[in-house]
Amino acid sequence: MIPLLAPIFQGEWAPYGETLACAPHPPPDAVRVADLLADPPRLLALLRLKARTLNMPERDLRAVASAWSMNYLHALLPPVAAAASLLQHGFPVRPEQVWVSLDDADGDPECFHIVELGTPRPGTGTAERYDVLLWTHLAPLFTRLTQLTRLAPKILWGNAVRYLEPVLEEGLRMSDQAPAVAADLEHLLHRPTWPQPCGTLRDNPMFMPARRGVRVADRSAPPVTLHRQCCLYYLVPRLGYCGACPLSPEFERERCASTAD
Image (tube, rainbow, N blue to C red; front, side, top):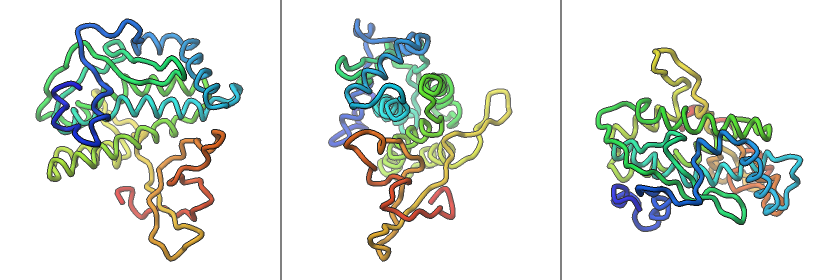
């Protein structure tokens, strides 16, 4: 684990900090993210490999791309977001600055590699610390996955929310409700627009209505917080709906009065 992250990722959280490594040279078999984005046939081959391991037909790779992206985000977002929000530190995550190790068996991303630590960014705003991660790294990746599989971008951004939200909420707990972390959480997930360097605003694709559901089998039980977007796992054989799927027939859905609920 990068020593900078060690105070944050301890105990049961330790594995989430071990998916980002820093060394003067990336492993020889790691793939630079920029090269992967520039090579659609290679990315498509990874998705087809993933489809075979899931016993999914290759004619429809939407659920496969969602599952692959979840593993990508699982490895990338916790260490990068924790550093950005809790430590006010920016790791270099432009696609040309970061490499990814891929599992030979199923094509899943396992670990990311950087060759320098980046720079401290104390006192900077959320947009400054997250702009490269979101718009230079994730947005082109999601665009490429959509082009290759027709997977809706909102599903990919919803998958990103699944990792950003718990990291930031745990960061709030660890930092005793630090205002800077609270501001990041509000800015990333609860604002409908995102400021651009030129001064204009763009839509924030991670701004999604919070959802709750009442269990059909027990309407007297408290409502359950559901995921903001379905990840399509229910299309994967033997997996079915996850325990908080907004499309699951197990729940009668309702929209929260506030997206911050």
